[in-house]
Amino acid sequence: MTKQPTTWSQRFESALHPAIVRFNASIGFDIELIEYDLTGSVAHAKMLAKTGIISDSEGEQLVNGLEQIRREYQQGLFVPGIDSEDVHFAVEKRLTEIVGDAGKKLHTARSRNDQAGTDTRLYLRDKIAQIRQQLREFQGVLLDIAEQNVETLIPGYTHLQRAQPISLAHYLLAYFQMSDRDWERLGDVSKRVNISPLGCSALAGTTFPIDRHYTAELLHFDRIYDNSLDGVSDRDFAIEFLAAASLIMVHLSRLSEEMILWSSHEFGFISLKDSCATGSSIMPQKKNPDVPELVRGKAGRVFGNLQAMLVVMKGLPLAYNKDLQEDKEALFDTVKTVQACLEAMTILLREGIAFNSDRLAAAVTEDFSNATDVADYLATKGIPFREAYNLVGKVVKTCLLGGKLLKDLTLEEWKELHPAFETDIYSAIAPQQVVAARNSYGGTGFEQVRKSLTAARDRLND
Image 1 (tube, one colour):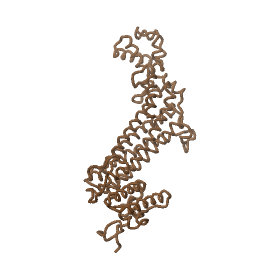
Image 2 (cartoon, helix red, strand yellow):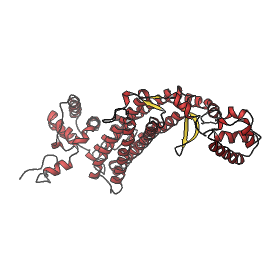
Image 3 (cartoon, helix red, strand yellow):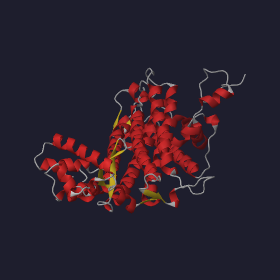
Image 4 (cartoon, helix red, strand yellow):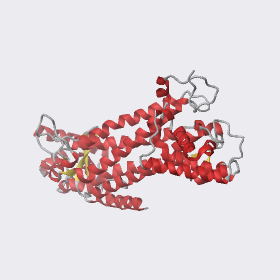
């Protein structure tokens, strides 16, 4: 009878079915964690030697062997296959080949349960730091464009209907604020990622005199889990990250939708440069906004990863269950997707679009988005706002019937509507003045926008 591979104890007499081997194995994706597995194992080996669980010489052998595996992997010389099942066994198997029986001692006082949790946290801690840096680069590009366009006007919308003209810089600063919340949110998530489960073992701790605080210190964790059951089974940190990543994708997708609309013939607010656009296989005149379309589409897979992780966790009894193997692909895919989308959108903004200033200037003069300012004008003359509001509705109706815009009305026509109108109504409804006048804190007035830009730039430079 074929013996079970040495992965398992002699409790087993026969080998797994080959299809079950493939189904059970995670080496195909958790190899992503190998550098973190090696780092965690080095810390564990040092702790075993420090506490006298193994000798100093054995500890040194283990550390040297693990670092050799790191070099081999980086050089492409260590490529474990499915027979290793997962990255943890792959490392231990290779370590034993290098250092002999001492390699079999590495797993003392440790389980794959706390080992996998440690590796995942080390990985995610690094990736969060990288994504936060990408967010800062993305914000920097938004600011660069905004600083050049404080007095460039663009129609503002509600319900996708023309509402009021605003500063283009103000528009872009809205996305700066969204991404700043993303940056802060990831920092908050990182606090709960940076907790060490190493030493929780399978679920109940260990009989060996380990020093969990020492391994946490070596691995730069802020603290350790206080409960071993919680330590090996907690994936809240992963769900929090997936939720934060989903919000990043919401924001990138909203901006993508803006870019798609703005680049259409119907809007014409931006032009796509060749470096960030593609053509049609049949229509030679077309230039397609593939980057924002892909970002908009990829948001769905990140949302799906969050939902998948929630479903995995919702019915799991304590402590570790094999279901938790499903956390990694969701995390890895989300990290790669978010990083790729941030990179692509940063490039698109920096070098892939051009704002069409003539079209933007015309867009804010061809509608009734200054109607609120007529009502505000009358309110400053002592007319109750609601009365002014109703009167302006009548003005707009009159203009529509006459095929005119507000700016086209003569002073006599204004006075027929209400005697409070004077010649200064024309300056009050001019687009530049309409925007400049909205000088309340956080508003689109140019003075406020410049203050917001200064504060945003300071934020990036902190």
